[in-house]
Image 1 (cartoon, rainbow, N blue to C red):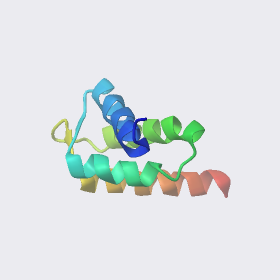
Image 2 (cartoon, helix red, strand yellow; image 1 turned 30 degrees about the horizontal axis):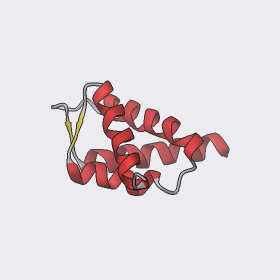
Image 3 (tube, rainbow, N blue to C red; image 1 turned 120 degrees about the vertical axis):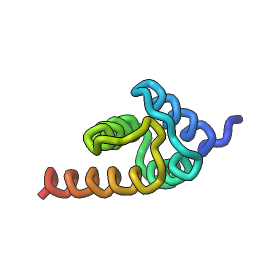
Length: 85
């Protein structure tokens, strides 16, 4: 049985790769922690939003670090609060 965290990490990495982005290891670890409590149906939606937000950050390189991911997650959280409010 594949470890859930490892499986989620692979999902995250392949989603980023599909968009031409490469995640640093601390960034993928961070996103695993962020997405683990999210229920499975919502995960891909969250992942899409995080990647979308990252792409709007005008990244200087295709390598994405933890700091960029934290910013993207905060923006997604803020958007979600706006939606539900």
